[in-house]
Image 1 (cartoon, helix red, strand yellow):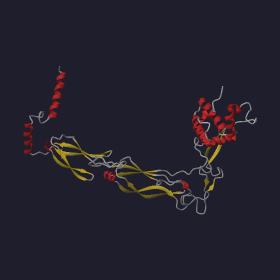
Image 2 (cartoon, rainbow, N blue to C red; image 1 turned 120 degrees about the vertical axis):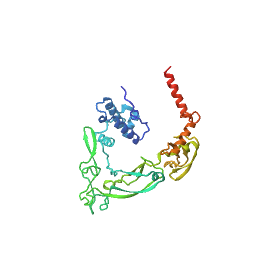
Image 3 (cartoon, rainbow, N blue to C red; image 1 turned 180 degrees about the vertical axis):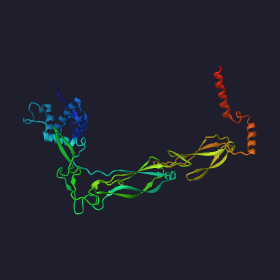
Image 4 (tube, one colour; image 1 turned 60 degrees about the horizontal axis):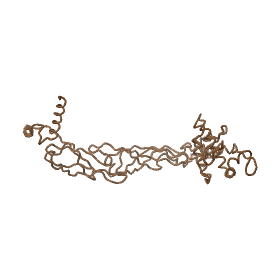
Length: 378
């Protein structure tokens, strides 16, 4: 049975550079690695196949032989120089897997300084503050770089020394069968350095607990669940590593008059039934002051009036929303005798509560009720 083309196995072209071959191999090797596909024979065979292809194509001499003679270059002890050719040695194989599978087993060839943790601060704002923008000072607990040792963790006059177990890499290689696995150095715990004389203030951590006060600019139009990121204002990283970020989580408090929906504001405006029937003009509140709203005659309860550009300016595109006022016709209370008599006479003039001329909605409703019951008795 003929073997598959090595370039086809790795999914690269014959003109691919070494870095492209390595990239393709890493992707496939991580996908089909036996530790990730335990008990899967197909994955195991695929893994062996891509390993074999990589070992040939990453070696320039073997790749040249393969390009010239194909698979025959590595069969029957034949190659272009009539010398015996073998696959990559065990030590080379370990180096390959040290590079490729460092990420799988949590290791890296060189120790990277661990960035400090991100912090989150919950901030409550009034609706007015959120809509118009403001500046707030906040006090947060945090870990900051130690000023005594300047973040090194070592006492004055000394400095951390490279770990003799991992030679400053923070990682050691362990051979398991023909696999080489990287793991954190147990001597320096992955740091790559040893502090023999820790700083007495931070005790070798390079950070101390403290509080800091920050000024946070709140942009106009911000809303609940929005977040503001302050770069490098989180916890300081250990041993001079860069700090994390601070996220300010926004929550807008409930307003006694307005409700916000996206960039629009809503409010309910009560009017008496005389105003609703005859019409008139009222004042309604906005976040910029009062404005006049004209109520047309025969306005029904629940009608929505739009006052343009009196809403919230968007924090993204700076477009401004509207104010929507829903009028609610209020039933009068605490009537005196004169008022009751006037209303009684008014009701009589309506020819009852089903008056066709004055209460068209009531008439439609009760006509519909009558038809419903008539249909049931047929």
